[in-house]
Image 1 (spheres, helix red, strand yellow):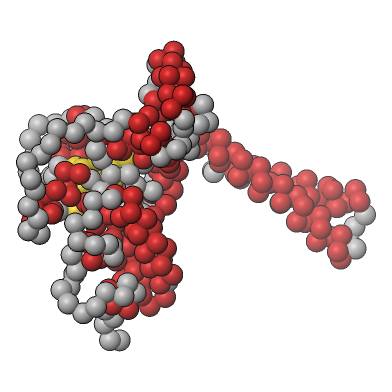
Image 2: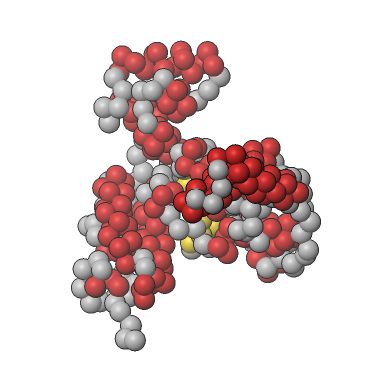
Length: 334
C-alpha cells in the first residue's frame, strides 16, 4: 500500500517540509499569538482527522492527532511558544512588564461574568476557602472548561480538552493508578524532552519529582477541567488496562536514578490489593443487573414455548438467578 501524505491529503498543506512547522500544521499564520485562535483551529482539525481514525489509516490518524496536540500545547504555552518562535528565527523586543491576566479578569474580558460580580465571587471564595476558579463553577457563573481556561491564562499554562487527546500507552503505563488519583493528573506523551501531564492545578514539586524519577525527564503541566481528568482516569486506568507491575517497579520517593532505569523499570510480579469502595459498588451494580437478566431470560424463554405455568416459570427463574448470584458473589462481587 502506497504511503499517504496525511499533511497534504487531510490538512491541505502543500508539498514542502515534512513534518511542517507547528504554525503550518495547525493552519495559522506564522507566529500567531492569539492562543484562542490556535486552539479553535486545532479543534476543527482534530475533528476532521478523527474521521480517518478507523480502517487502514488508523495508525496514521492517531500519529497525526498526537502531533497536532503537541503543536497546540506548545503554541498555547507562553514560555514554550517563545522558545519555539526563537528557534524559527523570530526576534523579540525587550520584554515589557506585563502581569498575567487573573481568572476573574479573563472571565470579565470574555463576558462570562459581569464586572459587578467580581466582589461577590471573591467573597464566596474567601468564605469557603476555595479558589476563584472553583468559586465561579460552584456559583454556576461559568462552565468548568471556561473557569479552567481562565486559570490557565493566570498560570501561563496551556489548557487541554482531554476529549481531544490520545494519551500514549507508554506514558500511562509508567504512572500507577494511585499516583494519578492522588495528584489528579494524567500523563499524555513526551514532547521535546518533556512529559506532558494534564493537571487540575499548577503541578506540585512532589509530582514533578515523581515524574522525573519514573520517566527520566522533566514534566510540563497543562491544565484540564477537574471532572474531565477524573473521567479520563476512570477510562484509561480501569482495572486490568494498565501494566501496574511496570508502574510499581519505580519507587515514588527515591534519590537520583538514571534515565534508562526510570524509562524502563524492571518488571516485577504485582500483587492484587484490596478493591476500592468505588470499585466494589460498581461491581455490585453490574452483578445485580446480571442477576435480574438471569431471572428474566429463563422466564421469557419458558413463556414463549408455553412449557410451564406461572409458578413453574417463576420457580425456574429463581433457581437460575440464585445460582448466578452465588457464582458472582464468590468470584466477581467480592
